[in-house]
Image 1 (tube, rainbow, N blue to C red):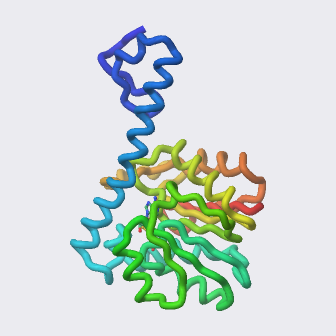
Image 2: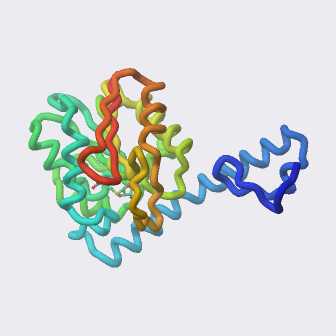
Length: 239
Ligand SMILES: C[S@@+](CC[C@H](N)C(=O)[O-])C[C@H]1O[C@@H](n2cnc3c(N)ncnc32)[C@H](O)[C@@H]1O
């Protein structure tokens, strides 16, 4: 049954002509549509951060699309709070300039850190700012790591509007599968949704309760926090 020229179908705009195709063809075309969208997303991410870096420079938190270093610091504190990092390996997905490193060092000095970021310019700054730590240039979602890491942390990397809740769930599953001990991530969102309208631009707001429920389907060892910010939450998943 066709109600309108186009229909919003689980978050993606689908041309109505697809709806009259036999269901298997519809599914195939629908998958191609999602595939194309997912393929374009990294380019959008790079374009957005390149613009921010050009506008603000590498000494500003705004290059990372944070409001300020003070607001980033609140997230770093929550993210590392529960991690017993001593003698462990850590992968920081979407590490930016690696600025979470001092917060990890404030907990313990003996750990092995690797940061990965899709923005080569961020990695170059990180290598100069935090000598002696490992950094990789690349798209995490495209990379397959042979090695597992004890902890995987991910601070704000999944905030882009192009990533739906279901994309993010897939990403979190990938992070969790790649970790030996656990993962910690934070993203923009809240439960309940803040009443005041927040200007987000390219940022996607996530229902924190839906995300928490998904995480609980992966493990019962979950820590959830959202008290520290009006529109950001942190989830730690342990094995
Ligand atoms: C909001 S910034 C946060 C940077 C850093 N985690 C911090 O808190 O200081 C998000 C970072 O994720 C990176 N990023 C986004 N998608 C990525 C991907 N697919 N693979 C690797 N890095 C990615 C961006 O380039 C950006 O540096």
